[in-house]
Length: 111
Image 1: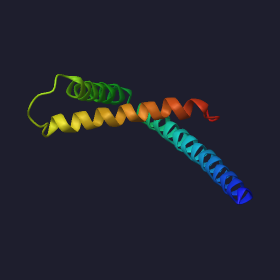
Image 2: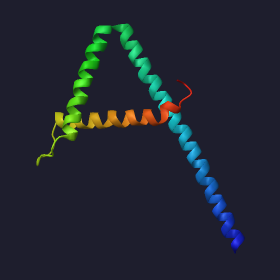
Image 3: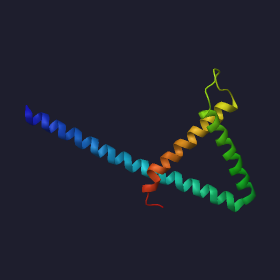
Image 4: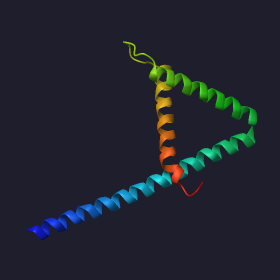
């Protein structure tokens, strides 16, 4: 009875450990792929037109700033609609991507 329980506990521990190691590896590869994609997009955009790249970055910055303002301002009693909801969702997605890259791409060997 005790040996079966110990064996079952060891098996669960090994499955969990291997699962976490595989998940870390997959997340690290995804972070590296995302980082490489962002750098490649910026490089190709800059080589096509530096002015449009700067203008696009400025517009994206304004969009994300508006989304941050919509996300962190005092709550109003009405629902967000249209542009406000899109900006808030865009900011949330950008923030989650930045956190993901900070956590996983900094350990990436592709840097």
